[in-house]
Amino acid sequence: MIDLRSDTLTRPTPGMLAAMAAAPVGDDVYGEDPTVNAFEERVAALLGHEAGLFCATGSLSNMVGVWLHTESGTEVICDRQAHLVRAEMGGHALNHGVTTRTWHSAHGVFDADVVEEMIADEAGPFLVRTSCIALENTHNFGGGTVLPIETVRAVGEVARRHGLAMHLDGARLWNAHVATGVELADWGREFDSVSVCFSKGLGAPVGSMLVSSRENVERARVQRKRLGAGWRQAGVLAAAADYALTHQLDRLADDHAAAAALADEVRAVRPEAVGDVPTNIVVVSTAPGEAARVVLEAGAAGVAVSAMGPSVVRAVTHLDVTLDECRQAGRTLASLL
Ligand SMILES: *Cc1c(COP(=O)(O)O)cnc(C)c1O
Image (cartoon, rainbow, N blue to C red):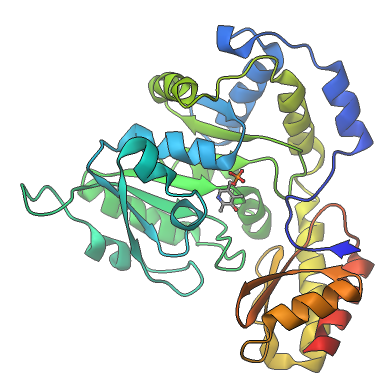
């Protein structure tokens, strides 16, 4: 099976397993896991922040990251296709009393004035007050799109003008970095907090990181424990993520090339079925209502993809599939369209 359902499907490589087995560990709730501590420092510095908090999932690091900037009864605003509102099971509302309001965009890319129009400044007893703007880069449900650094900076100016905090869901910020060449710290510095995932294209089995100021990360550490997510010898997982960052970051360019090659194969037969492919996610339009059929028949032909809507199929390239397999998957999908 050529499994292109997600870039979370990768398995640890032999080098990664060796790094995990060799990692010195301690109790992280005591602050005594040397591998976790070093990795938190490494990632914070890489993203231009003071401190980091290693977390089990990106949903957790988003949850705690948004919590840093919002009181209960205020709102975070974000794109209507953001992972934060679609895929975190209402956690921001349930756990923290934070409501959400969303803007519309074309595939997760928009102008700063779209955001500014949404903001509700202090309006007494009339309107929910906006306390945080959350962006996502690259944009998952938008199809791996990159929000340009210029737009991020323009939204940052809006945030400062209104006294709002900025959080980045950077689950795939690595892909935005590799696709644009913009340094990770240049992205990171635009935000009050950033969440990144090691469990997507980087290929670690588990792990995300929240970075922010030292003071914020100390508060986040307490809140993570409150949510039941303090952990002990997490160094075995930090070692995997650290290995991924050292050895498997640059190769994201291969995933982008494989996604482009897959898209080319589809376009060769159905030019209108695929738009731009900025990173490692290929969004394929089927005939109306045909996505489920295409997914089923692709599966029978050895290609696993997912239906993202009645007429949309998604393929995500990653570490565990080769360029040739992606080309073959593209031909299979083309034949089924
Ligand atoms: C995967 C992902 C997350 C985090 O997902 P978890 O499964 O909780 O680790 C957050 N945001 C985006 C955009 C993602 O793609």
